[in-house]
Image (cartoon, rainbow, N blue to C red; front, side):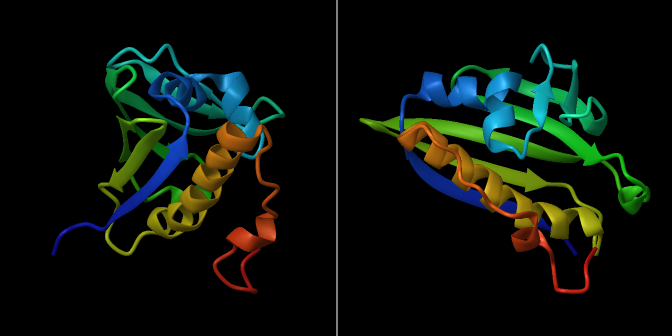
Length: 156
């Protein structure tokens, strides 16, 4: 049986260069990614970290591909004990300009079969990318409450 993958496609009224900046600039990511700053030099093989507003690293991985402003791929996994038996999965962003729009396709793959990380990103990516789209198009990110991202009412 193949491992699960997550695919999300959206169209954003922006340029590929602005979208690329939004995906790779830590100060910008903090505006739409619940305060998290992505940190990397974006060279293939370099480390990738997601840094919370308190300075702790919540997620880490490696840059696999970097072709500005067309394609970006990196592995990462959440470092909490909740995901200790899982391994980094690959997130790939493909940017395709169409006039005033850019088609953004995110494919996240390589999850542990039945793992918790896949369930988490399946809730997280739509919120993050919707907020990114809103920020680029209106200048304001979405204010999505964390409660909206829980799998069910019993989840802490």
